[in-house]
Image 1 (spheres, helix red, strand yellow):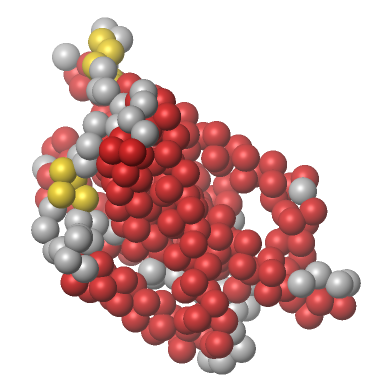
Image 2 (cartoon, one colour; image 1 turned 90 degrees about the vertical axis):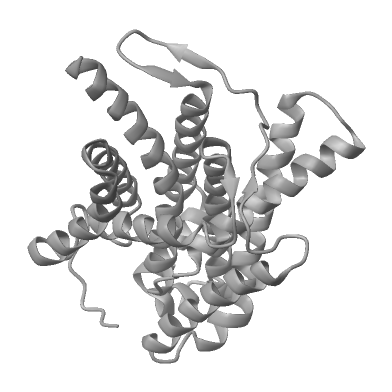
Length: 303
């Protein structure tokens, strides 16, 4: 009985960690490029969920179709909405403060987060209440003997894995990825080499926001309800995952997210309240023992 329990919790932890990883990657990419902790990132996740929700009903009403087409429409909408709102936040909130004291940008990020939450709550077609998320893909339970999983578990882990592998290839081998690494190391030197720094920063926000939007879609499918404040807790936990792995490190963000997902799942099996608080306990321990995170490097930057 114990082995069944453990296997089940591992599967659930990997599923949760996959969602956290997609959010944490946005945190760590933005921090690595512009040294900004974008606390509005959890709200890009929320916007992605609502975009997928709207796209599903709109596509179904006008075109109908099979679940595969509806899922693709929801995925595209979540990525476009998450990336688009991230670009807008960068253009109008963060870019004017790019070379101001970093505390200004940090406070602005908190302000952007609160604005998005209250703005969406005030919209008549959305409102502050919970909404049930539609079954974009019919849910199927699969009994593996040592654990019971749904096709949503496989979808969450597979989608996250594909996006993370794609991001790794982009950063390591593409011209944009090389430009990102150059801007992360030295913006002035990158400019002298002809790199458009602001364009690279824009792409970074776009990719991070799109990943957060996909995470919102996956979370909506997995926990079928959405509301304007749904990004607060996942956003904080994904930030903690990024800190745990080493803020600014892409592999670190992924590692930290899966550790967070497993720790939260196992702690929740013992006590749901402990499960909710374990992330913050981990944050305290990391800051005390290894402030740079598991895969992070020491820097001289100060907030």
